[in-house]
Length: 475
Image 1 (cartoon, rainbow, N blue to C red):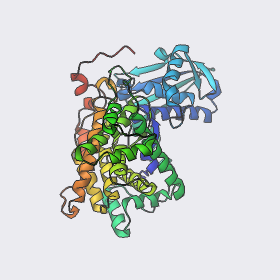
Image 2 (cartoon, rainbow, N blue to C red):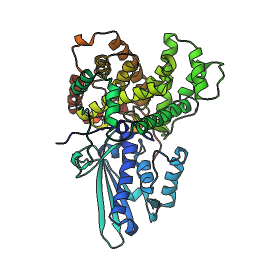
Image 3 (tube, helix red, strand yellow):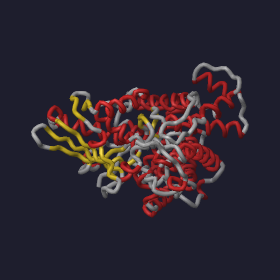
Protein backbone atom coordinates (compact mmCIF):
# COMPACT_ATOMS: atom_id res chain seq x y z
CA UNK A 1 0.00 0.00 0.00
CA UNK A 2 1.39 3.40 -1.05
CA UNK A 3 1.77 5.77 1.88
CA UNK A 4 -0.17 9.01 1.88
CA UNK A 5 1.84 12.08 0.96
CA UNK A 6 0.59 15.27 2.59
CA UNK A 7 1.74 18.79 1.79
CA UNK A 8 1.46 21.84 4.02
CA UNK A 9 -1.32 22.99 1.66
CA UNK A 10 -3.26 19.79 2.27
CA UNK A 11 -3.37 20.45 6.01
CA UNK A 12 -3.97 24.19 5.61
CA UNK A 13 -6.65 25.12 3.06
CA UNK A 14 -8.39 28.43 2.43
CA UNK A 15 -12.14 28.06 2.44
CA UNK A 16 -15.49 29.23 3.74
CA UNK A 17 -17.05 28.17 7.05
CA UNK A 18 -18.57 26.73 9.04
CA UNK A 19 -17.16 23.19 8.57
CA UNK A 20 -14.28 21.69 6.60
CA UNK A 21 -15.86 18.23 6.46
CA UNK A 22 -19.47 19.40 6.04
CA UNK A 23 -18.96 22.60 4.04
CA UNK A 24 -15.58 22.77 2.30
CA UNK A 25 -15.37 19.04 1.53
CA UNK A 26 -18.86 18.79 -0.04
CA UNK A 27 -18.17 22.05 -1.90
CA UNK A 28 -15.04 20.50 -3.41
CA UNK A 29 -16.90 17.26 -4.14
CA UNK A 30 -19.53 19.20 -6.10
CA UNK A 31 -16.80 20.91 -8.10
CA UNK A 32 -15.18 17.55 -8.85
CA UNK A 33 -18.50 16.12 -9.99
CA UNK A 34 -19.11 18.91 -12.51
CA UNK A 35 -15.50 18.48 -13.68
CA UNK A 36 -16.21 14.77 -14.24
CA UNK A 37 -19.31 15.60 -16.24
CA UNK A 38 -17.25 17.95 -18.37
CA UNK A 39 -14.46 15.41 -18.87
CA UNK A 40 -17.00 12.80 -19.94
CA UNK A 41 -18.52 15.22 -22.42
CA UNK A 42 -21.84 15.04 -20.58
CA UNK A 43 -22.22 18.51 -19.11
CA UNK A 44 -24.23 19.99 -21.98
CA UNK A 45 -26.58 16.98 -21.95
CA UNK A 46 -27.64 17.24 -18.30
CA UNK A 47 -31.33 17.82 -17.73
CA UNK A 48 -31.64 17.25 -13.98
CA UNK A 49 -29.37 16.77 -10.94
CA UNK A 50 -30.14 15.09 -7.64
CA UNK A 51 -27.98 15.09 -4.51
CA UNK A 52 -28.18 12.39 -1.83
CA UNK A 53 -26.69 13.17 1.59
CA UNK A 54 -25.92 10.27 3.92
CA UNK A 55 -25.01 9.81 7.59
CA UNK A 56 -23.48 12.77 9.35
CA UNK A 57 -23.82 14.97 6.27
CA UNK A 58 -27.57 14.41 6.41
CA UNK A 59 -28.01 14.72 10.18
CA UNK A 60 -26.14 17.99 10.63
CA UNK A 61 -25.97 19.12 7.02
CA UNK A 62 -28.24 22.14 7.29
CA UNK A 63 -26.56 23.37 10.46
CA UNK A 64 -23.17 23.06 8.79
CA UNK A 65 -24.25 24.60 5.48
CA UNK A 66 -23.69 21.40 3.51
CA UNK A 67 -26.64 22.18 1.25
CA UNK A 68 -25.36 25.71 0.67
CA UNK A 69 -21.83 24.51 -0.13
CA UNK A 70 -22.93 21.81 -2.56
CA UNK A 71 -25.18 24.10 -4.56
CA UNK A 72 -22.49 26.78 -4.77
CA UNK A 73 -19.96 24.14 -5.78
CA UNK A 74 -22.26 22.89 -8.54
CA UNK A 75 -22.44 26.43 -9.94
CA UNK A 76 -18.66 26.50 -10.29
CA UNK A 77 -18.05 28.95 -7.44
CA UNK A 78 -14.73 28.46 -5.65
CA UNK A 79 -14.47 28.77 -1.82
CA UNK A 80 -11.05 30.43 -2.04
CA UNK A 81 -12.28 33.39 -4.07
CA UNK A 82 -16.09 33.47 -3.85
CA UNK A 83 -17.46 36.61 -2.19
CA UNK A 84 -18.51 35.56 1.32
CA UNK A 85 -21.21 38.24 1.33
CA UNK A 86 -22.81 36.55 -1.69
CA UNK A 87 -23.09 33.07 -0.13
CA UNK A 88 -26.54 33.40 1.41
CA UNK A 89 -28.11 35.51 -1.39
CA UNK A 90 -26.91 33.04 -4.04
CA UNK A 91 -28.26 30.07 -2.10
CA UNK A 92 -31.60 31.75 -1.51
CA UNK A 93 -31.85 32.69 -5.18
CA UNK A 94 -31.41 29.03 -6.21
CA UNK A 95 -34.16 28.02 -3.79
CA UNK A 96 -36.54 30.77 -4.87
CA UNK A 97 -36.01 30.61 -8.65
CA UNK A 98 -35.72 26.80 -8.74
CA UNK A 99 -32.88 27.15 -11.23
CA UNK A 100 -29.26 26.01 -10.99
CA UNK A 101 -26.48 27.27 -13.25
CA UNK A 102 -24.50 24.02 -13.51
CA UNK A 103 -20.75 24.72 -13.67
CA UNK A 104 -21.68 28.27 -14.65
CA UNK A 105 -22.49 27.02 -18.16
CA UNK A 106 -25.89 25.33 -18.14
CA UNK A 107 -29.08 26.51 -16.45
CA UNK A 108 -31.26 23.59 -15.34
CA UNK A 109 -34.40 23.22 -13.26
CA UNK A 110 -33.65 22.47 -9.61
CA UNK A 111 -36.17 22.00 -6.82
CA UNK A 112 -34.37 22.20 -3.47
CA UNK A 113 -37.04 20.22 -1.62
CA UNK A 114 -37.15 17.35 -4.12
CA UNK A 115 -33.67 17.27 -5.66
CA UNK A 116 -31.52 17.53 -2.52
CA UNK A 117 -32.31 14.64 -0.20
CA UNK A 118 -31.25 14.27 3.43
CA UNK A 119 -31.15 10.50 4.07
CA UNK A 120 -31.03 10.65 7.87
CA UNK A 121 -31.39 6.89 8.42
CA UNK A 122 -28.87 5.77 5.78
CA UNK A 123 -25.09 5.63 6.02
CA UNK A 124 -22.42 4.32 3.69
CA UNK A 125 -19.73 2.01 5.14
CA UNK A 126 -16.55 3.81 4.09
CA UNK A 127 -17.15 7.06 5.99
CA UNK A 128 -20.06 8.83 7.75
CA UNK A 129 -19.73 11.89 5.49
CA UNK A 130 -21.01 10.67 2.12
CA UNK A 131 -22.72 12.38 -0.80
CA UNK A 132 -23.92 10.93 -4.09
CA UNK A 133 -24.45 13.14 -7.14
CA UNK A 134 -26.81 11.93 -9.85
CA UNK A 135 -27.06 13.59 -13.25
CA UNK A 136 -29.93 12.64 -15.57
CA UNK A 137 -29.42 13.26 -19.28
CA UNK A 138 -31.81 14.40 -21.99
CA UNK A 139 -31.49 10.96 -23.63
CA UNK A 140 -32.70 9.19 -20.48
CA UNK A 141 -29.30 7.96 -19.33
CA UNK A 142 -27.81 8.75 -15.90
CA UNK A 143 -24.34 9.41 -14.50
CA UNK A 144 -23.53 9.28 -10.79
CA UNK A 145 -20.54 9.54 -8.47
CA UNK A 146 -20.19 9.18 -4.70
CA UNK A 147 -17.74 11.22 -2.63
CA UNK A 148 -16.63 11.04 0.97
CA UNK A 149 -15.61 14.13 2.92
CA UNK A 150 -13.08 12.61 5.30
CA UNK A 151 -12.14 15.68 7.34
CA UNK A 152 -10.11 18.85 6.93
CA UNK A 153 -11.53 19.45 3.45
CA UNK A 154 -10.05 16.17 2.14
CA UNK A 155 -12.33 14.43 -0.36
CA UNK A 156 -12.17 10.86 -1.66
CA UNK A 157 -14.15 9.65 -4.66
CA UNK A 158 -15.55 6.15 -4.34
CA UNK A 159 -13.30 3.68 -6.14
CA UNK A 160 -10.16 5.80 -5.85
CA UNK A 161 -7.21 5.32 -3.49
CA UNK A 162 -3.77 6.82 -2.86
CA UNK A 163 -2.19 4.68 -5.57
CA UNK A 164 -4.11 6.69 -8.17
CA UNK A 165 -2.67 9.99 -6.97
CA UNK A 166 0.54 11.48 -8.30
CA UNK A 167 3.43 10.48 -6.05
CA UNK A 168 6.53 12.61 -5.53
CA UNK A 169 10.00 11.67 -4.32
CA UNK A 170 10.16 13.11 -0.80
CA UNK A 171 13.69 13.39 0.63
CA UNK A 172 12.31 12.84 4.15
CA UNK A 173 9.20 10.62 4.04
CA UNK A 174 7.34 10.66 7.36
CA UNK A 175 4.56 8.36 8.52
CA UNK A 176 5.07 8.49 12.28
CA UNK A 177 6.61 10.87 14.78
CA UNK A 178 9.55 8.53 15.37
CA UNK A 179 10.46 8.80 11.69
CA UNK A 180 10.26 12.59 11.85
CA UNK A 181 12.50 12.61 14.91
CA UNK A 182 14.97 10.30 13.13
CA UNK A 183 15.27 12.70 10.20
CA UNK A 184 15.62 15.70 12.54
CA UNK A 185 18.34 14.13 14.67
CA UNK A 186 20.27 12.62 11.75
CA UNK A 187 20.34 15.87 9.79
CA UNK A 188 20.17 18.46 12.55
CA UNK A 189 17.20 20.08 10.80
CA UNK A 190 14.23 21.52 12.65
CA UNK A 191 10.76 20.09 12.01
CA UNK A 192 9.85 23.11 9.89
CA UNK A 193 13.05 22.68 7.86
CA UNK A 194 12.21 19.03 7.18
CA UNK A 195 8.82 20.20 5.92
CA UNK A 196 10.30 22.85 3.66
CA UNK A 197 12.76 20.33 2.17
CA UNK A 198 9.88 17.97 1.41
CA UNK A 199 7.80 20.76 -0.11
CA UNK A 200 10.54 21.21 -2.74
CA UNK A 201 9.33 17.93 -4.26
CA UNK A 202 6.09 19.70 -5.17
CA UNK A 203 7.13 23.25 -5.99
CA UNK A 204 9.95 25.85 -5.67
CA UNK A 205 10.65 27.21 -2.18
CA UNK A 206 9.57 30.72 -3.13
CA UNK A 207 6.15 29.45 -4.21
CA UNK A 208 5.70 27.51 -0.98
CA UNK A 209 6.64 30.52 1.13
CA UNK A 210 4.31 32.80 -0.81
CA UNK A 211 1.49 30.29 -0.38
CA UNK A 212 2.06 30.01 3.37
CA UNK A 213 2.05 33.79 3.71
CA UNK A 214 -1.21 33.93 1.72
CA UNK A 215 -2.73 31.51 4.24
CA UNK A 216 -1.44 33.66 7.09
CA UNK A 217 -3.01 36.72 5.48
CA UNK A 218 -6.40 34.97 5.57
CA UNK A 219 -5.87 34.05 9.25
CA UNK A 220 -4.79 37.61 10.08
CA UNK A 221 -7.70 39.22 8.26
CA UNK A 222 -10.14 36.76 9.83
CA UNK A 223 -8.97 37.63 13.35
CA UNK A 224 -9.13 41.36 12.70
CA UNK A 225 -12.53 41.18 11.02
CA UNK A 226 -13.95 38.98 13.76
CA UNK A 227 -12.77 41.40 16.44
CA UNK A 228 -14.53 44.27 14.69
CA UNK A 229 -17.86 42.69 13.74
CA UNK A 230 -20.84 42.83 16.05
CA UNK A 231 -24.24 41.14 16.05
CA UNK A 232 -25.55 37.60 16.28
CA UNK A 233 -24.48 34.41 14.55
CA UNK A 234 -26.82 32.89 11.93
CA UNK A 235 -28.62 29.60 12.48
CA UNK A 236 -31.33 30.34 15.02
CA UNK A 237 -29.50 29.84 18.32
CA UNK A 238 -29.25 33.62 18.83
CA UNK A 239 -25.58 33.37 19.83
CA UNK A 240 -24.14 36.85 20.28
CA UNK A 241 -20.66 37.59 19.00
CA UNK A 242 -18.23 38.06 21.89
CA UNK A 243 -14.95 38.94 20.19
CA UNK A 244 -16.18 42.46 19.37
CA UNK A 245 -17.08 43.57 22.93
CA UNK A 246 -14.04 41.74 24.36
CA UNK A 247 -11.72 43.53 21.93
CA UNK A 248 -13.39 46.85 22.71
CA UNK A 249 -12.96 46.36 26.46
CA UNK A 250 -9.36 45.18 26.23
CA UNK A 251 -8.16 47.79 23.74
CA UNK A 252 -9.69 50.61 25.80
CA UNK A 253 -9.17 54.08 24.37
CA UNK A 254 -6.17 53.14 22.24
CA UNK A 255 -6.35 54.47 18.69
CA UNK A 256 -5.54 52.34 15.64
CA UNK A 257 -6.52 52.17 11.98
CA UNK A 258 -5.46 48.74 10.71
CA UNK A 259 -4.10 45.36 11.76
CA UNK A 260 -0.51 46.53 12.36
CA UNK A 261 -1.46 49.52 14.49
CA UNK A 262 -3.97 47.31 16.34
CA UNK A 263 -1.19 44.84 17.24
CA UNK A 264 0.96 47.72 18.46
CA UNK A 265 -1.91 49.01 20.59
CA UNK A 266 -2.35 45.55 22.14
CA UNK A 267 1.36 45.33 22.95
CA UNK A 268 1.31 48.69 24.67
CA UNK A 269 -1.68 47.66 26.74
CA UNK A 270 0.34 45.37 28.97
CA UNK A 271 1.67 41.86 29.38
CA UNK A 272 -0.04 40.61 32.55
CA UNK A 273 -1.28 37.01 32.71
CA UNK A 274 -4.99 37.85 32.64
CA UNK A 275 -4.51 40.41 29.88
CA UNK A 276 -2.70 37.91 27.64
CA UNK A 277 -5.16 35.15 28.46
CA UNK A 278 -8.10 37.35 27.50
CA UNK A 279 -6.50 38.32 24.22
CA UNK A 280 -5.77 34.70 23.24
CA UNK A 281 -9.42 33.89 23.88
CA UNK A 282 -10.47 36.95 21.88
CA UNK A 283 -8.34 35.89 18.90
CA UNK A 284 -9.85 32.40 18.90
CA UNK A 285 -13.42 33.64 19.35
CA UNK A 286 -12.99 36.07 16.46
CA UNK A 287 -11.97 33.36 13.99
CA UNK A 288 -14.68 30.91 14.88
CA UNK A 289 -17.41 33.52 14.97
CA UNK A 290 -16.39 34.39 11.42
CA UNK A 291 -16.35 30.68 10.58
CA UNK A 292 -19.88 30.26 11.93
CA UNK A 293 -21.03 33.15 9.72
CA UNK A 294 -19.85 31.69 6.39
CA UNK A 295 -16.68 33.77 6.65
CA UNK A 296 -13.37 32.95 4.95
CA UNK A 297 -11.05 30.95 7.18
CA UNK A 298 -8.15 28.52 6.93
CA UNK A 299 -8.72 24.90 7.83
CA UNK A 300 -6.23 24.33 10.63
CA UNK A 301 -6.59 21.40 10.20
CA UNK A 302 -10.40 21.79 10.11
CA UNK A 303 -12.88 24.65 10.10
CA UNK A 304 -14.40 23.71 13.45
CA UNK A 305 -10.92 24.05 14.95
CA UNK A 306 -9.86 26.96 12.72
CA UNK A 307 -9.32 29.37 15.62
CA UNK A 308 -6.69 27.49 17.64
CA UNK A 309 -3.63 27.89 15.44
CA UNK A 310 -4.36 31.51 14.39
CA UNK A 311 -4.91 32.42 18.06
CA UNK A 312 -1.61 30.85 19.17
CA UNK A 313 0.21 32.33 16.18
CA UNK A 314 -1.27 35.75 16.99
CA UNK A 315 -0.15 35.26 20.61
CA UNK A 316 3.37 34.54 19.32
CA UNK A 317 3.30 37.60 17.05
CA UNK A 318 1.87 39.97 19.64
CA UNK A 319 3.45 38.86 22.91
CA UNK A 320 6.59 36.95 21.86
CA UNK A 321 7.95 39.32 19.20
CA UNK A 322 7.27 36.83 16.42
CA UNK A 323 6.07 39.22 13.74
CA UNK A 324 8.36 38.30 10.83
CA UNK A 325 7.67 36.42 7.64
CA UNK A 326 10.30 33.78 8.37
CA UNK A 327 8.90 33.10 11.86
CA UNK A 328 5.36 32.86 10.51
CA UNK A 329 6.46 30.43 7.79
CA UNK A 330 8.34 28.39 10.40
CA UNK A 331 5.28 28.26 12.66
CA UNK A 332 2.86 27.12 9.96
CA UNK A 333 5.30 24.62 8.42
CA UNK A 334 6.01 22.97 11.76
CA UNK A 335 2.32 22.81 12.64
CA UNK A 336 1.48 21.17 9.32
CA UNK A 337 3.80 18.21 9.94
CA UNK A 338 2.18 17.38 13.25
CA UNK A 339 -1.23 17.60 11.60
CA UNK A 340 -0.17 15.23 8.85
CA UNK A 341 1.04 12.67 11.41
CA UNK A 342 -2.41 12.65 13.03
CA UNK A 343 -4.08 12.49 9.62
CA UNK A 344 -2.00 9.44 8.66
CA UNK A 345 -2.11 7.64 11.99
CA UNK A 346 -5.61 8.46 13.17
CA UNK A 347 -8.09 11.02 11.80
CA UNK A 348 -8.81 14.74 11.68
CA UNK A 349 -12.53 14.15 11.15
CA UNK A 350 -14.96 14.70 14.03
CA UNK A 351 -17.40 12.41 12.26
CA UNK A 352 -14.82 9.64 12.69
CA UNK A 353 -13.17 10.55 15.98
CA UNK A 354 -15.13 13.19 17.84
CA UNK A 355 -13.79 16.63 18.70
CA UNK A 356 -10.47 15.20 19.88
CA UNK A 357 -9.76 14.82 16.15
CA UNK A 358 -10.28 18.52 15.55
CA UNK A 359 -9.61 20.69 18.60
CA UNK A 360 -7.17 18.10 19.97
CA UNK A 361 -5.16 17.89 16.77
CA UNK A 362 -5.14 21.65 16.24
CA UNK A 363 -3.94 22.18 19.81
CA UNK A 364 -1.14 19.66 19.29
CA UNK A 365 -0.15 21.37 16.04
CA UNK A 366 -0.10 24.81 17.67
CA UNK A 367 1.85 23.57 20.70
CA UNK A 368 4.54 22.04 18.50
CA UNK A 369 4.84 25.14 16.32
CA UNK A 370 5.05 27.53 19.24
CA UNK A 371 7.67 25.37 20.93
CA UNK A 372 9.92 25.33 17.88
CA UNK A 373 9.54 29.06 17.33
CA UNK A 374 10.45 29.73 20.97
CA UNK A 375 13.68 27.79 20.57
CA UNK A 376 12.67 24.31 21.70
CA UNK A 377 14.55 21.23 20.56
CA UNK A 378 13.05 18.73 18.14
CA UNK A 379 12.23 16.39 21.04
CA UNK A 380 10.57 19.22 22.95
CA UNK A 381 8.50 20.07 19.87
CA UNK A 382 7.10 16.55 19.70
CA UNK A 383 6.67 16.49 23.47
CA UNK A 384 4.56 19.64 23.32
CA UNK A 385 2.32 18.08 20.67
CA UNK A 386 1.93 14.96 22.80
CA UNK A 387 1.03 16.93 25.94
CA UNK A 388 -1.60 18.97 24.10
CA UNK A 389 -3.33 15.95 22.59
CA UNK A 390 -3.04 13.83 25.74
CA UNK A 391 -5.37 16.27 27.48
CA UNK A 392 -7.94 16.27 24.69
CA UNK A 393 -8.34 12.50 24.44
CA UNK A 394 -11.97 11.43 24.44
CA UNK A 395 -13.36 14.88 23.63
CA UNK A 396 -16.74 14.37 21.97
CA UNK A 397 -18.36 16.28 19.12
CA UNK A 398 -21.91 17.20 20.11
CA UNK A 399 -22.85 20.50 18.42
CA UNK A 400 -26.15 21.95 19.58
CA UNK A 401 -28.56 22.18 16.67
CA UNK A 402 -25.88 20.79 14.36
CA UNK A 403 -24.30 24.25 14.26
CA UNK A 404 -20.57 24.94 14.63
CA UNK A 405 -21.27 27.30 17.53
CA UNK A 406 -21.96 25.65 20.90
CA UNK A 407 -19.64 24.29 22.25
CA UNK A 408 -17.36 24.58 19.21
CA UNK A 409 -16.45 28.27 19.40
CA UNK A 410 -15.43 28.22 23.08
CA UNK A 411 -13.51 24.99 22.56
CA UNK A 412 -11.15 26.88 20.27
CA UNK A 413 -10.23 29.17 23.15
CA UNK A 414 -9.59 26.12 25.34
CA UNK A 415 -7.49 24.46 22.64
CA UNK A 416 -5.38 27.58 22.20
CA UNK A 417 -4.72 27.99 25.93
CA UNK A 418 -3.86 24.30 26.27
CA UNK A 419 -1.43 24.60 23.37
CA UNK A 420 0.42 27.47 25.05
CA UNK A 421 0.47 25.57 28.35
CA UNK A 422 1.74 22.41 26.64
CA UNK A 423 4.50 24.41 24.97
CA UNK A 424 5.60 25.95 28.25
CA UNK A 425 5.63 22.55 29.95
CA UNK A 426 7.71 21.05 27.15
CA UNK A 427 10.17 23.95 27.15
CA UNK A 428 10.70 23.52 30.90
CA UNK A 429 11.03 19.72 30.72
CA UNK A 430 13.59 17.12 29.75
CA UNK A 431 11.95 15.18 26.89
CA UNK A 432 14.33 12.26 27.45
CA UNK A 433 12.39 11.51 30.63
CA UNK A 434 8.95 11.66 29.01
CA UNK A 435 6.84 8.55 29.62
CA UNK A 436 4.47 9.06 26.68
CA UNK A 437 5.48 9.49 23.05
CA UNK A 438 3.59 11.37 20.35
CA UNK A 439 3.09 8.12 18.43
CA UNK A 440 1.55 6.51 21.52
CA UNK A 441 -0.92 9.39 21.80
CA UNK A 442 -1.79 9.18 18.09
CA UNK A 443 -2.49 5.46 18.48
CA UNK A 444 -4.52 6.08 21.63
CA UNK A 445 -6.56 8.77 19.93
CA UNK A 446 -7.44 6.39 17.10
CA UNK A 447 -8.36 3.59 19.49
CA UNK A 448 -10.52 6.03 21.43
CA UNK A 449 -12.18 7.13 18.19
CA UNK A 450 -13.03 3.55 17.31
CA UNK A 451 -14.48 2.94 20.79
CA UNK A 452 -16.46 6.19 20.90
CA UNK A 453 -20.23 5.90 20.55
CA UNK A 454 -21.41 7.15 17.16
CA UNK A 455 -23.79 9.65 18.77
CA UNK A 456 -20.76 11.65 19.95
CA UNK A 457 -19.33 11.97 16.44
CA UNK A 458 -20.81 15.11 14.88
CA UNK A 459 -24.34 13.74 14.63
CA UNK A 460 -26.01 15.92 17.32
CA UNK A 461 -27.59 12.68 18.61
CA UNK A 462 -25.96 12.89 22.04
CA UNK A 463 -24.18 15.03 24.62
CA UNK A 464 -24.95 18.74 24.82
CA UNK A 465 -26.94 18.51 21.61
CA UNK A 466 -29.65 16.48 23.34
CA UNK A 467 -29.46 18.01 26.81
CA UNK A 468 -29.84 21.68 25.94
CA UNK A 469 -33.42 22.58 24.99
CA UNK A 470 -33.54 24.69 21.86
CA UNK A 471 -36.13 25.75 19.34
CA UNK A 472 -34.73 26.36 15.88
CA UNK A 473 -36.74 27.95 13.08
CA UNK A 474 -38.12 25.67 10.39
CA UNK A 475 -35.72 25.15 7.49
